[in-house]
Amino acid sequence: MSIFWENSMLQAKLAYYQSNPFSGLGLEEIDALLSSDDEEEDEDLLTLQKHQQDLEVGHNSSLEWQEVGVMHKIGPRRIIEQRTFAYDDLIRGSTTKSLCRLKDFCCLHDKTQVAVRELEFETGGVGFKVWDASVVLMDWLHTNVGEIERKNVVELGAGCGLAGIFAVDHANSVLLSDSDETLIENLLTSVVMNRGEAQSTQYFPTQVLELDVEATALLKPRVSLQFEDGKIATLCMLDYSQVGSRGIRDDTVAHFDFVFGSDITYSEQMGLTVARACYSLLKPLGRAVVVSPNERVGHLDCLLEFMRLGIVVSVQEVVHQREMTSAAIAERMLGRKPKICIRTNIVILFSKSGPAHAIGWHCGGAEEEGQQIG
Image 1 (cartoon, one colour):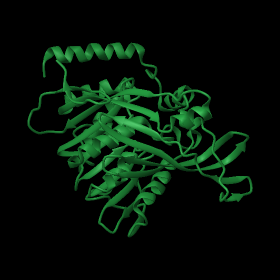
Image 2: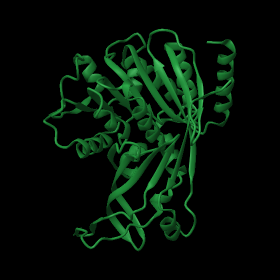
Image 3: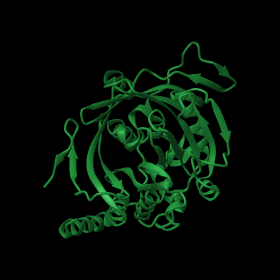
């Protein structure tokens, strides 16, 4: 690691501190700021169209979503997001409020498909929806599936669980974790939507993998599902700030081969916490990947802490583009051209220990990825 590179990172870190809107805020304050500042996406502004076969019970009605989807572009790869169903409890003219939405995410190059259920912010907090960074994370896992194949893996701050549910088809066992009980219940619904009924279901399991009682208590497992093909999905009320605060030499929960998370570095402290939690959860030689939108200042603290704790294998800039698939229909319904959202995400790959690697900084555009800079 060159002194010049470290100094450059520190200078960049100071520059981000000066413009960081989340600096000094607690988690509840960050949640409130995100909910008030987040501009509604075009697809959320479209009116739901009632179908003749809708089931109506009192003031509630099941509604089918207009056939307008979203295209996610990450390098040469394309992922279609299609809202398939929404359940509403309030309909006033063209205004609707959804209790939940079902969405399919389909990779066009091989037809991989993951279904998730989204909630409202008032119900699920920041984890109520699939954020763009989680689409980037799922794409990264899909492209680097060898990192999770036949491994025991953990998703931190799973939210709606897009990446973690994808991992269930490839890993030996997946621990999907979040600190919100409502999100854990929602994750259970989404896992079953994708995998069907489990061969066995254990509520409040007393043991997760080979972990002892103390480690299991720290992870706070709520339900463990084992499917016919032997795959295991465990949903945990894990507060990763507690894991990271126990000290980096504590190996209580160091039983996992791979850890991943997206958009969980809102603040400087959260960046440090994420890196320490990854380190604490990983076995020797275990690896972790963290995806953060470029504007989340905590990714710099996460990167620097990873550098202190082990080996940063690579750092990538990945450009993600989101646009509506049926622009003509959307324009007619919105009264304007739908927006195209382009955002850069920072992808950090960390190794707990192993042979030394040089840090590479890569840049990827909408059609081109992986060019070495400098």
